[in-house]
Structure formats: structure tokens, C-alpha cells
Image 1 (cartoon, rainbow, N blue to C red):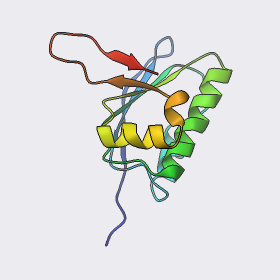
Image 2: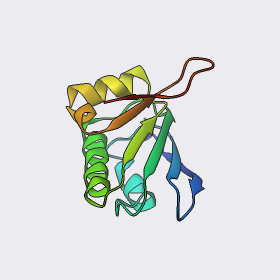
Image 3: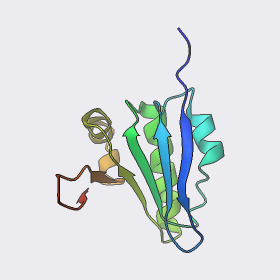
Image 4: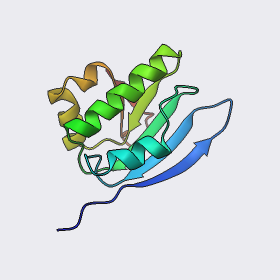
Length: 117
């Protein structure tokens, strides 16, 4: 069985606004190094991670997300997950990550995003 791949796309990366990054694929032991090299955790700007196409995150991936979030908060910025599936949100809850990570739920038609903390 081949290792799953993680595709990382910068959707928006303006110096005075949030950086929006779309991930496609799982965030696991084999894909975290790619994530770390492409999504620096320097906390220099707000970060929104589009998780619409992330089927799952294991404990290594969740630990990496928590680390990125801690660095961003230390620098006065935030990290939010957008479009996270029920499976990813459950993974966050079971690893206590939801207390740290902000998850933007998919909005109902005609309404804006809802922040879940």
C-alpha cells in the first residue's frame, strides 16, 4: 500500500492579511514533514487551514497543528481550521486539541461561518 500524499496550496498569502492554505489528503506521520516545510509555524500572520479535503488527522498531525497554533498565539495571531469533517473534529476533541484550535464549521446555506471553541 502506498503512503498517502498531502497536497498543499496557498490560496491567499498577503502580508497584511491572513494566509489561507488548502490541504488535500491526510495529516499523518508520513505527511507532517511536507506540512512543516510548506506551512512555517513562525506565527507572523493569521493562518486559516482549509481542511475540506482532509479525511483524517492522526495524533502526530494533531500535535503538529497544536504546535503551529501555540506559536501563532505567542505572536498575537491565530490558526483556524475551515471545513473540517466530523472525523477530523472528533479527532480534535479526543486529543483535547479543540480546546486550543479554532474550528470554523461549514456554514448552512445563506449563513456565515460559525466558530466552535
